[in-house]
Image (tube, rainbow, N blue to C red; front, side, top):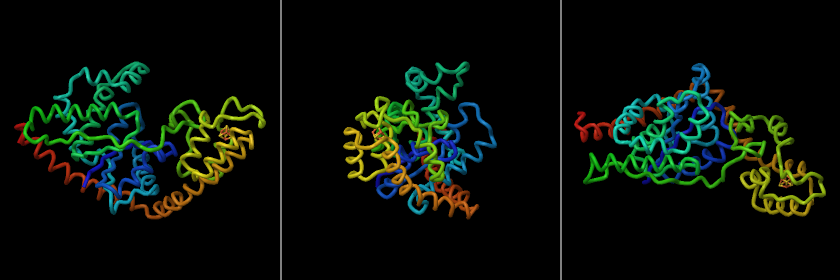
Length: 326
Ligand code: SF4
């Protein structure tokens, strides 16, 4: 059976961009492959952060993932820093990763340009990602398009380590991407990717009232100024959210109504709002149930860490043996 690994930063409560762009896909995939999902808190400490907030966000993320449908009966869900082998393998991979490959990473170039002081952690971030995946010898990694370059680097690292220490059996598989079916979810400003730092999100667990308060003023096709102006759904983020949340017949109706100025944007948003609620209401209900059992999240994460460590220990024993470290 294939093994998949994917990680998510503990950014607190999931927003619908995380949900549609990653987590919904994980929930579907967990029934098709052995699935390991990790809350990557070591990745989250690369930039300034508040320790108490990080602690709370790790729990909130675990709760959100369980509410969204990650099922600990079929998946392993754990927190990265509970499995020290991640950083142990990352150090080993540091020794086989060419500096030039790291400096070429688009995300490093983008982020480092905006920083006054660049940490080695930011540069080495993709090495830790490679360790996250290869520690479990995962062969498939659900990712968005913006992570493809990092995944390619994981394959380079696997190849280089194999060439040096496992020339006969390719110990580490070269992980292949499983692209998320939903395209990149833009924020309510229609300008940039949905992200907490941009303040353009809808929280997965927000109440219907809060959601409508955000959806109502959300940016649409900028050329649709009057209700009588025909619109272009493809340039409108509300249309793309319909594609993610509404049934296909509703999506076709939206297209027609938009192009023919058959309705106004508020009517269009009301229909979207109904369909968002249809999808998110059971998730909110599950979240409330989980919150009513305060020990549940810690128990799931603790069990997940034990399972993950069992697999990680086997990998590290083999790695150290082949490298003369044991
Ligand atoms: S009618 Fe709907 S799809 Fe068309 S511009 Fe307005 S909100 Fe967007």
